[in-house]
Image (cartoon, rainbow, N blue to C red; front, side, top):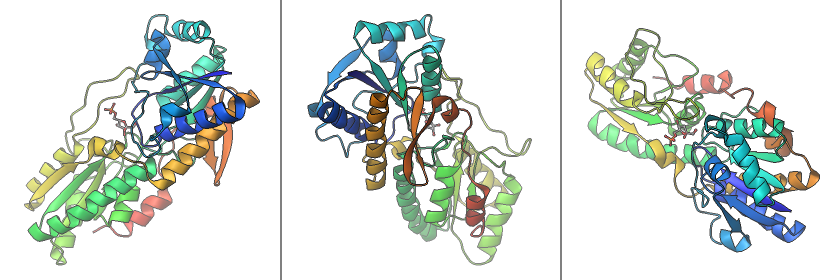
Length: 342
Ligand code: F6P
C-alpha cells in the first residue's frame, strides 16, 4: 500500500517516534511505501508531500518536534479544502492516511472519514485532554519539564522570600498543571475546570507566610479563569479552529497577588519549552506502540478509528468518539493536590 502520514496542530514530543514506528512496520512487515504530507492538513490540501522510508527516520526517536512540520490549517475552512485533500490522495495513489493530532486534526479526520476517506487517527497532545484515550504521548514529557522548572524555582523563591507563579499549558484541562503541582510540591494549582477566587488564592498564600513559610509556588494553567468579575483577563486572537491564543494569566495573577498581599511575586511562563526537546522514555514507548497499531489498523481495513490507550492496552475506538468529548481532570486527582494547598 501507499500510506500517507501527517502531523497537525501543536507539535509534541513523540511525533517522530510514531512515524518511525509506522514506517518501520509498514515497510518491513507489509512492504508499504510511506509518504509524508508536509505541515499537517496544509500539505494534504496543497499536495505538498515527500516520499519517506525507514532511512528518513534514522536518529529521530529522541528528537522532539516533527520532521514533517505541522500547522493549524483546517481544510474545512479553505474553499474546496476537503475535495483538494481527496484529490491529493488520488493523484498520488495513496491508499490510506494516518493523521496524528489532537482534537482539531482528528475532528477533520472524522469528517473526512464520513466523506469516504480511509483514515486512521493517532492521538497527540501534551494537554492530555482527548476523551477516548487514557493518555496521549507528550504529556509525560511536558509534566517532567514543568517539574524540573518548579524544583529549580523552589530554591530561588526560598532565597528571596518570593511568590512564584508558574504558568503552564492546558487550554481546556488542567492535567499538566495538576500533575506538575503534585510532583513539584506547589502551594496551589489553578485549572480551567474550576474558576478561581483571587481573594482565596491570596488568603492561602498569606496563611502559609504567617505560618513561617516565606516562599510559595502557584501553578496556573494557561486556560484557568477567575470567577466572574473578580479579575480582568485579556483574550487573544483566534486560529482557524476558533481557539484563542492563550498565555498571560500568569502575569495578571502575579500582579494581583503582589497588589493584594504585598509579597514580591514573579511570573514564569513555561510556554513552548513544555513542547520542545526530547521525549521521555515513557512517551517514546507509548508513541511507538500507537504507531505500530496504526499501521496494523490500516492493514486490517479499520478505517475511521483512532488508536488509544485503555487499561494499559492499545485499542481502537471510532474517530467520531475520540473528539466527541474532552477529558477534563478527574476531581479525585485535584483533591490530592488540594491536600497540600497552603
Ligand atoms: O494543544 C496543545 C497546546 O500546547 C495548548 O496547550 C496551547 O494552548 C496551544 O497548543 C498553543 O498553540 P500554539 O503553539 O499554536 O500557540
